Image (cartoon, rainbow, N blue to C red; front, top):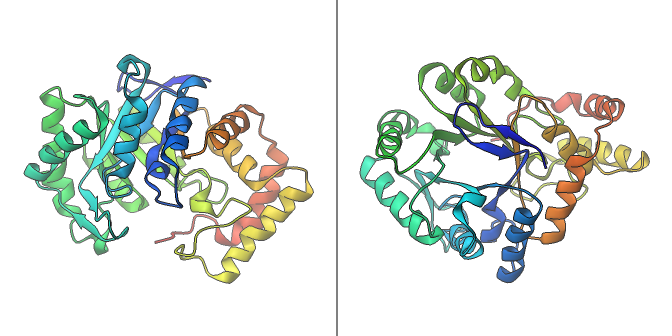
Amino acid sequence: MNYRPLGRTGLKVSSLSFGASSLGAVFHAVDEAEAIRAVHTALDLGINYFDVAPAYGGTRSETVLGKALKGIPRDRYYLSTKVGKYTNPEKYGDDTLDYSRACIHRSIGESAARLGTDYFDIIHIHDIEYQERRHAEWALTEGFAAVAELKREGRIGAVSFGIYPMDLWHRIFQTLPIDAALIHNHYCLHDTRLLELLPLARARGIGLINASPFGMGLLTDRGPADWHPATPAQRAVFQRAAAYCTSRGTTIARLAMQFSSQHPEIPTTLFSSSNPDSVRRNVAWAAEPCDPALVQAVQALLAPLANRDWF
């Protein structure tokens, strides 16, 4: 495992990092004991950055990750969670967005209790674009100020956002003194718009966390979940790319992980899994050299859908 500075945060993160959304059965049913083994496998393989959120599985992801990290020396890992978005545990997708100072301070305390810590290395302000951006300005003002206050108090180490839209990312990079940025689905085989942010990230020392190397399932043989907005015709484009990879003796998921995790200016790429074997497989894939000719051929097949927004 390679380790790289995360901007000017002072953190030296593993080139692969662990997203804990899967631990909360967000994508499918999860065996808790196996999920805990997945976390321990990640630690054993050298992964030292773990990210979670209270919204994942209605706090279940935080609870399971807390159990997995219990007894692990705190200096063996960096930990982040998120604030502002909270999901009903009985109905995934039934979201409450609250970026008030009171809610954020309460949320940090509750997450800390579930995760067994009194300090977070990073806090991400979560999904401010949801609900047609009705709460975005609230998040960018009171929400940001509340998290910055937690940093001044020494309760957290770095302030970040975890969102999707590129126009909001450009605005945040240009106007707010963030320390890090969790950017998902914008540095993968069919979308490389994260690169637009590199000059400002470099100039301001913003640590980039690249999430979703598999493009929400588009870059897998199985394909995305039913809720994904891609049409049948669009899904077929990705299926053709997957078939091409198979014909070349590999899989599109393998190529996707190699491509997303090997840019020299992106410190870490975050994936999620509740399966120890999957963790081992992803770490092995990321250590393999990426075939630039195959990347070029696959990107040509995906060109009709390149840099497309999937809301």
